[in-house]
Amino acid sequence: MTQPQTTTDAIAVALLGGGTVGSQVARILTEDADMLAAKAGAPLRLAGVAVRSKDRKRDVELPKDLYTTDAESLIDGADIVIELMGGIEPARTLIEQALRDGKAVVTGNKALLAQHGEELSAIAAEHGAQLSFEAAVAGAIPILRPLRDSLSGDRVTRVMGIANGTTNFILDRMDTAGADFADALAEAQELGYAEADPTADVEGHDAAAKVAILATLAFGADYSIDEVSCEGITQITAADSAAAADAGYVIKLLGIAERRTAEDGTEGAVLRVHPTMVPREHPLAAVRGAYNAVYVEAENAGELMFYGPGAGGPETASAVMGDVVSVAERLVRGGPARVRTSTSSLTALPAAEAHTSVMVVLTVDDAPGVLRRVAAVFEDHGVSIEALRQDSAAAEAEGAAQLRVVTHHARQRDLDATVEALRGLDVVRGVVSVVRVEGK
Image 1 (cartoon, rainbow, N blue to C red):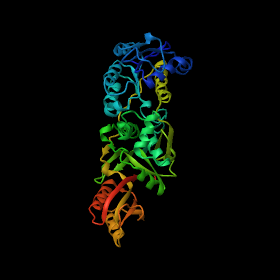
Image 2: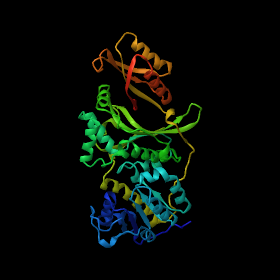
Image 3: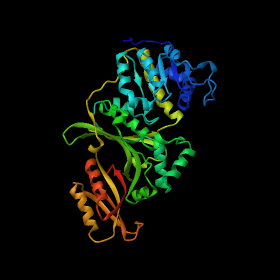
Image 4: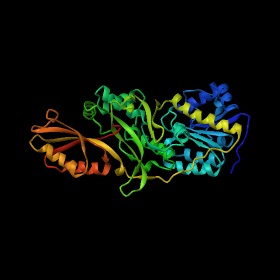
C-alpha cells in the first residue's frame, strides 16, 4: 500500500479531458491559483491536459505545451488525477492505473461509477488511494458529501430527486406551455439543454446511473445501474400533462431509492426512475427548467432538499474543484486516504416491491354500472381508490367516457395486476395512461 504523503510543495494535477467541464476546471486551476493555494495549503499546479487532439479549439485556451495525448505519462507525474473524459474506456483503465499507483482520483463519470464503482472503490482501498466523485451527480449541487458525511449518523430512508436537467426542461415546457414532447425536445436541443442524440436523457438512463450512485452512499451498500428499474418520458403526452395539472399535479422524471421490506420479509432497497406526478405543493414541483433537486428523508433529520443547477461547465467544475481542494488538503496534512467500503448488505429489490400510487386514465363505456365494475377490479386486487373522476367530454369516441382514477399507496405488483385486469374488462375500451404518483 502506498504511504500517504505530506507536502507543502506544489501539488501536480493531471487533467484527463479538455471538453466543456475540463476546460472550466483548467480555467479555475489557472485563474484562481492563489485562492486555491490558500485553501489547500499548497499551490496546485496543472501538470497537463490529456486530450484526443491537441489542435482542437477549446473554450479555454491554455499554453500549447500543457496539452498531451499521452495520458499514461501524465498520470505518472501527478499527485491528483482528474478524469473528465466520460464513457467507460479508456477512462476506466486510466483511473485504475492512477489508483494502483496510489494517486488520488477525482471524477465526474457517472456512467463508469454506476457500472464499475464497486470495483474502483476496492482498488482504491487496496492501494490507499482516494476516489472522489461529487461532480457525478447533480452538477454543482453538493449532495454526495452530505449523504456520506453529514447524514452518516442517521438512517436515510429515501432519496428522491430530479437528477436530469434535460427531461426536467422538457416536462416543464409541457406543463407551463402545453407543448407536446417533440416540440419541447426540439426547444431543449436548440437551447443546448439536450444532445443531438437525447436517448440517455429521455429514456432515463442518465438519471438511473445517478440513482445507483446516490443509493450506494445513502444506504452504504453497492448498487449498479443494472439494479435500477428505468422508464423514460417519451410516452408522456401533452394530454397526460394537462390531466395531471387538472388534478393538481405536475409530472417530473424522478429517480427514487428507498428502503423497503419485500413480501417475503427481506429488507432491501428499491431503485427506480420513471415519470411521476408530484403534488403542486411539494417542493420538487417548483423545480423549473433545467435545474435539479434531490429530496432526502432520514429518520432523525427529517426531510431535506438540495437544489441548484444540475449541469453546465462552470457549475460542474465547481463540484470537481471541491473534491480537488479536499484531496489537496489531505496531501498537505498527511494521513490516510479516505476510502469507501460497504457498511450494509441491503440488497436491491425488484421494482414490483415498491410502494407507490398511480393515476390511471381509462376510456370506458358510458353506461350504468361501469363505475361499479371498474371499482370492483381495484378492490379485488387490494388497491384502494383515493379519487375518481368521470369526464364524458374528454372521450373521443361516441358512447364513451373517460375515467381518471388516483389510488392510495399500494405495492407495485398489485397496481400492475390491477391495470392488467382493467385492460381485460369488457366495459373498458382502453387504458390511456398510467403514471405513478409520489409526494402525497
